[in-house]
Image (cartoon, rainbow, N blue to C red; front, top):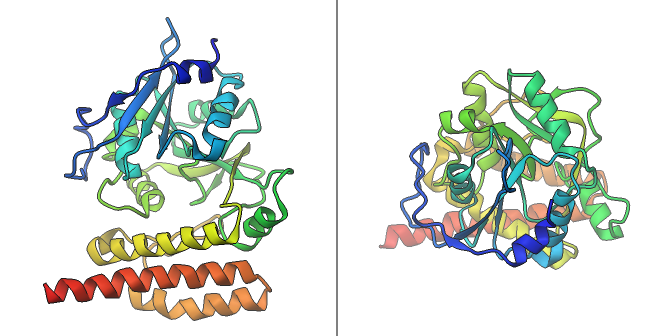
Length: 319
């Protein structure tokens, strides 16, 4: 196979605004100003369509490294669809799905790292053996070369990393940075929700469960999805996440679904008042377990949430 990065550097970007998405249940009415790059090996019917939404197709160098890691996979029956500059991740993934020719869709973030060259083959094998599984994800682990700061972040903040499972495990830790689905079933559930800027993972997991499918994390499938490499960038990320969560709460409260930090069953919906009430309890827990980075991130998230929820709500009343 010709080097994917060389193909990417010499490839052509095409406008995404004309890509039809008839399978999407909740379509964003705004026209996408993004563009896509589509790589498909010559004379091969792809079994897997890899979809990578990205802002700039660089991401501080992570994206190009990811292309190299994709090139090193021992599974070669895939195509790659990169959707660039669409501000809505859900819409970008739907655009990729509309172009996809593979039996499976495999989503990756543009800063995902794949240390294992057997990642794709392991995920496909599980899906082939288990038709009851609708979504299968991997285990986000801390790389050995991670900086002390990144290591502390991934240990302190829930969901940033976890001990890899030893068997196929039903879990809400199956997430977009490394996740496989059947293309037909993805379209059957209505694709990604293009209206919400945050909460895409829990929304899609719930839709697959409504279809009667399992959502799982697969043993021996590992990837790296790292947080920002300094405190300022990390807090800005949490502040932005808080604002996006507030926007979704205010406008689309029906899609506010819990995101547990562990495997297993959980209560998928809680009233906003209960989620606000538990905030000081979460802060106290972070303080008692001596996790200062988690405390600062929770505060930044709350500041972003409060600003977006109350300031914009006040502006709406005035207008």
